[in-house]
Length: 123
Image (cartoon, rainbow, N blue to C red; front, top):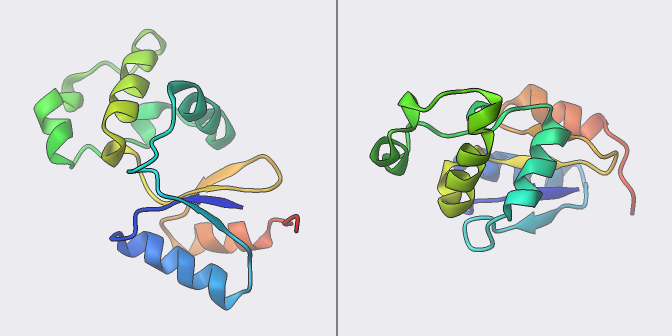
């Protein structure tokens, strides 16, 4: 499993601790320092079954600076949202868990972490 990790995020810390306690191997990706490309983010959105605005952190200062709350949420503007999230990776919800079965989960809740733990891993 790969986890898009922000070391200063409490939800990421909860996920790291959960996986460590359950001895689940995780590769941490410091996505703020190594942001995804537009293609990677689009692929992850597909794995999540989500649109970019569904995993965008609208409470971030840069979201207000960009006026994201007023951006349309339709397929035509999807590339615009992805480009903003690639340029400002702090807009990406965290932690994102890329599971070995090809799916992905936003691991913010204990229930989401339990789903990740229930997914078979490859060693």
